[in-house]
Length: 284
Image (cartoon, rainbow, N blue to C red; front, side):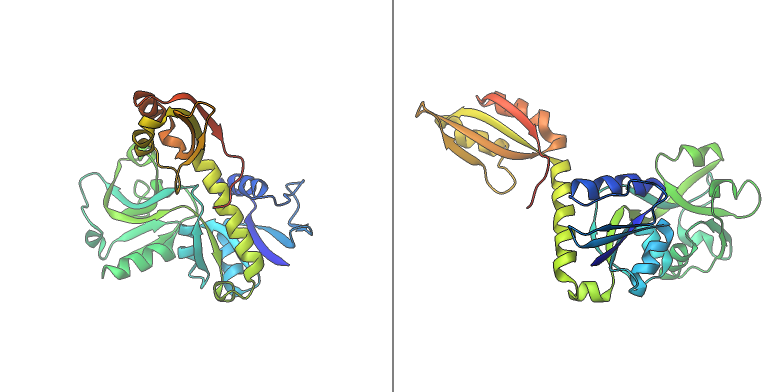
């Protein structure tokens, strides 16, 4: 059986569980369950702390896992990222007192507080900067005000929390993170190719189903090419004849964020009966 590590709590857990459910896998019925066997799909799910998942997968104890790119890189595990999953996106950046710093090189010889010291240490080393790292498990943004550090490195969304502490981001982003699917060297070589490839294909299908919709419309054949220029489809538009030989029915996949713009543009070139349908599942 393919052994899969899944986050048991935190920001990654709920969406990861939803994706696996949409991909046709059995979820846990009780939040206290640590192991769930899905015999039909020949997989076992192990519910673990997100920070530990890369270690278990990298060691070979488990075959594949879902975690954050930031947690993977911070762990120092030999686990390998094989796919981004499109959720839990965040940016990891340095922040310090307003106006004091402009780049990572300004941190030389100073104290930098973070919950991801492994990640920060490697980033600083890549830029030739030596700094003293202070590991904190939470409330990193308070470290400067409390005198524990001169700057911090943390996940930044809007920056409001940092500004409330008198801090501002500076320098280039350390990392752009998201939830990722990871495996180990054996998985990357295809030692369990059927189970792992099926999992990846199913998750890819969930991502496509979430990101795209189907758009159907009728169009005069004389305007068909103009309509297809508006929305060419994922690979190519599906064009079907109607009873009236001067008209055709068209179906295309459109990115969900562009739906209303595409509908407006199609209407402008003469499309009629424009209908949008959500995609429940997909295989691309």
